Amino acid sequence: MLVYALIILGFVFRVVPHMPNYAPVAAIALFAGAYLNKKAVPWVPLAIMVASDLIIGLHDVVLYTWGAFIVIGFLGMFLREKRSPLRIAGMTVLSSLVFYAITNFGVWFAWYPHTTAGFADCYIKALPFMRNDMAGNLIFAVAIFGSYELVMRMVTAPKLRAVLIAK
Image (cartoon, rainbow, N blue to C red; front, side, top):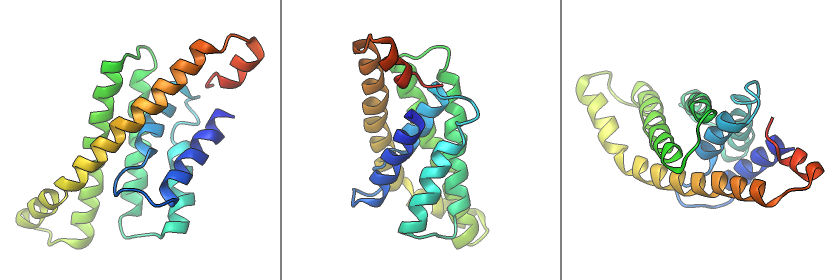
C-alpha cells in the first residue's frame, strides 16, 4: 500500500505545475531505499518517472534521469540500519550531487561539444538547477521521512501499523 502511495505522490507532484526542480522523486527514492523491500527500491522512482514523463514529455536524456533516480534509491539503502536527521540530510545532499553528475553527463553527451570546454560549460550552466534541486530534495525529504516517522509513533493499533510498515 505504501509503495502505491509513494508512486501516486511522486506522479502528482511531477505533473501538476510546480517550481522548476522542486519535485519529491529523489526524496521518495531515498525513502524507498531506506524503508521498502529491496526488490521495490528501483521500481518506485522508475514508475514515477516513466508514468509522468509519458505525460510531461520524453527528452534526449531521459535514461540518465531515470537511471539517476534508481541510483538514488540504492543510496537510500545506506539508511536502512541507522536513520537520523543528520544522516538523512547528508544522503539527501549526496543524492542531489549524484543526480547533478549523472544527468549533466547525459546533457553534455547529447547537446554539448565533446570537449573539455563543452563539459565544463555544461556543468557550470547547470549549477542553478542543482541549487533548486537540492533545496527541493531537502524540503521533501524532511516532509516524507518526518511524516512517516511521526505517523509510525502515533499509530499503535497493530492492524493499522501493519498497513504502514514498509516492507
